[in-house]
Length: 373
Image 1: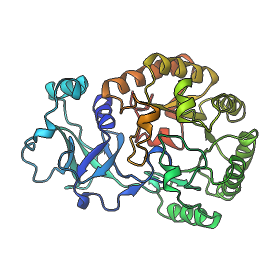
Image 2: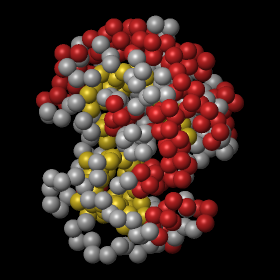
Image 3: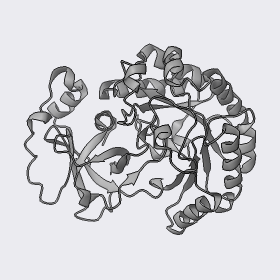
Image 4: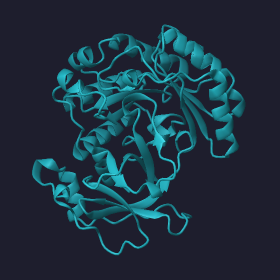
């Protein structure tokens, strides 16, 4: 799987897959993908996360390679042309792109193929997640939020808040598997940002004993970077969500973009360059010009942007009212923006490939500079 194939998979976002191939599918409890069942697919050293569906009309289909003698015939719903399908998809299929085998050592018979529009485009393996993602104990503390961003289902799901003891047990169980290489903590906002920062810091202090890198993603407060760095966190993520100010005012009315940007700048002084990140959603109706300008602004602060494809969640139909041009970005757009970000990061002396926690080393949801492009 190369960057072109991965861009196609991210743009589609979901795949029809036999539940028997999944074992125990994971359901996210954080952010715009909360409440959605998903799985990880690995091929050629690259990873992608897809929503797991039992949907014969899905354009992506995952099938076990054993016994797969010829590509499935495409259904009428698979036959998309013109503006309904990315030019990149057509180019990849027309080129009869080489199929990447999974990493050596995959158990025989575990290999699967992903078909797009009835044609096989890549082979690999279903990769088990530890907690939320492979290799990390990635845990959401508060599964609820007082901020009502219109692209995010968390306020609608109104989940629970895990206790400190519960989080510590989850990490201990993950550690015992021998597969825990990092700890990542994220949280919504049950009552206030200050309370969440204090809760996260208290937990982190009890996790440093594992001697693995720890990353934290929360909404910032005036002193959150100092508190979390002091507790033992190595990396921090404060999400801008979007830097199109008109969209931000409508979609993130409860948040303060200028405060988030100032907090990111301050975090670089405390955590250092290459250790501060920010999710930027692609697909809310923003222009490429705005994304490119924003990527440069963040990178010049020493912050690595994470360009995240919009998830159109069924619990947030109101997004269409607030952002009428919202749409899942195309594979071509995702690849173009990822390549642009790679150049900007290089120009600014930043490297997304050295990140040790949270989204960048996982790389399941995004095209990551220095890893995928």
